[in-house]
Image (cartoon, rainbow, N blue to C red; front, side, top):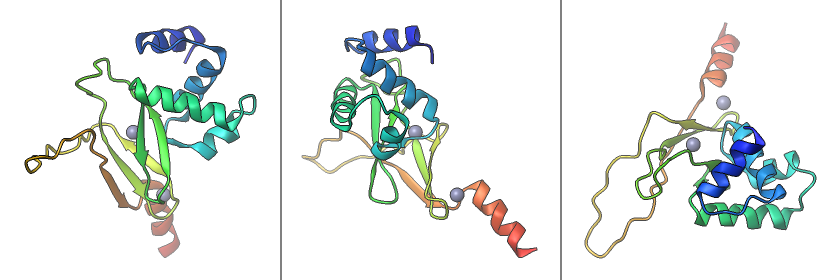
Amino acid sequence: MESKECELLLARHGIKPTANRVVILRTLAAGRRPMSMRELEMEIFSIDKSNIFRALALFRTRHLVHVIEDGDGGTRYELCYSRDEDNDEDEHMHFFCECCHRTFCLHDLHAPEVSLPDGYRLHSVNCLIKGICPTCTGKREADKR
Ligand SMILES: [Zn+2]
Ligand SMILES: [Zn+2]
């Protein structure tokens, strides 16, 4: 993602586009898969951990990132590409591979509609499927031969 594009995206979410925020946003955009804090730290050397964390918290409040739980009990961050904050069309399911421990976006699969009992208010749905990814399935098949 170009710097200019990052700045526009930040501005659209009401976030002041500082140099650090642009770097963090670009890293998330380049990641292709939801990234953990550790992965972000390993990609971004120029910004310290607490500042990355603070920027992510801000992105989260402004609905610029989705925060998801992965199958290892960790937290991952991904950019939200929805153009409408109130009706998120980018909410999708995730797939956790129990073999390589990577988390994938299933962009075409949306979380099922849920009707909650009285008194419960829904904020977000975290839908994670666990299994084996195509790469690992391929390796397993090859090992059998
Ligand atoms: Zn895998
Ligand atoms: Zn995703």
